[in-house]
Length: 147
Image 1 (tube, one colour):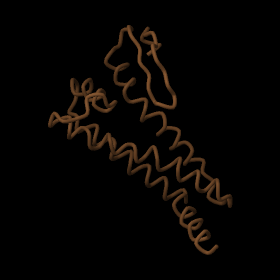
Image 2 (tube, rainbow, N blue to C red; image 1 turned 45 degrees about the vertical axis):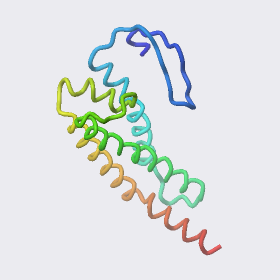
Image 3 (cartoon, rainbow, N blue to C red; image 1 turned 90 degrees about the vertical axis):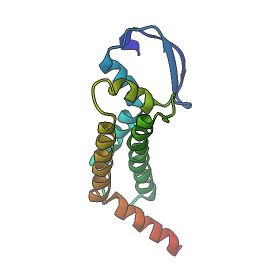
């Protein structure tokens, strides 16, 4: 927003909301504006999972790692299903995915977004399992059950 020259009117980190006026947006900057809400947490999640240490015994670390891995990956399901609703004309108009698709559909089929989101979900699940996060989570649940 700021790089496009917009003036921010309202910002809430806890409400995940920002509104602005003005600015000159290109197609790319518009796409980035609407995708950043999903992309930034996903990048952080993938980076965290890449550096995950499966040998750490801390219960907090293991549970926190599940949260950091699962939440951004599952949020991508909106990017899988909303393109289908967008094609039917029933997508929620104020959703970031819908606004992204409004710009993206000028250059490509909206279902391409669904395919990319599915690929990212699969990559996230593979990383989640391969790094041992799921195994350690199950181990922690079994330990809690014993107590």
